[in-house]
Length: 242
Image 1 (cartoon, rainbow, N blue to C red):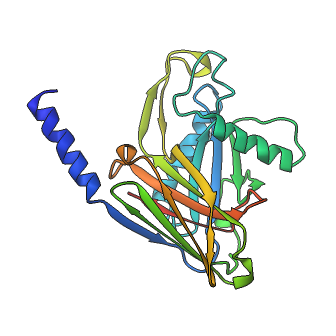
Image 2 (cartoon, rainbow, N blue to C red):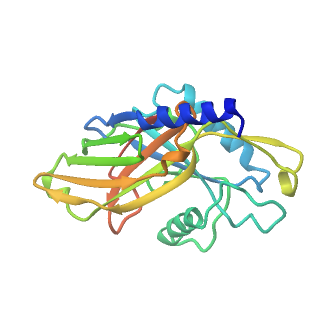
């Protein structure tokens, strides 16, 4: 490693070590918008371009938290997507099972646990009061969550999901349906953690850790949501850029 690269590496570590960000939803529901996609799928790039437009949408993070999950069932068909993971495929298959469907496909949008084809966030409708979800992240990758539901009776058996998102990722695809294309990805899941929340009085709390070496200020974001332990759809969500 040259002196210049060593200096840049040290500066990056120092920048990350001092990272401290926090996010808080309002009391009304923040929607979770999921996209199931793959670099091996020729019909996926337009869906991902739609996701990229969300960066300029005023509803981003305030009313909607987007997450692009790259599935792995295309990986054996000519091109392995480096962003794909079995856990993302398993989540989509769980949705399919819940909907009574025997198959999965890409691209597929899911809004708050239901199939979504509108691609128009202006049709989200009125949001109900579900309570406030707060999150903080430090430079070591420690994430602390607090959720205070609108109704304290709804603070039992909650699961939390913490996803690190990559922004502005590029890939030169050399095989498969997208061979020869340079693809760009935003809101792509690059780390995924989940676990139970703990009840403390009228609210629930949780502590998680994401890989700090994958946090790049200005090029990553966080998506966080809580759900009932036996359901996939979120109760409340929060997120933002790092």
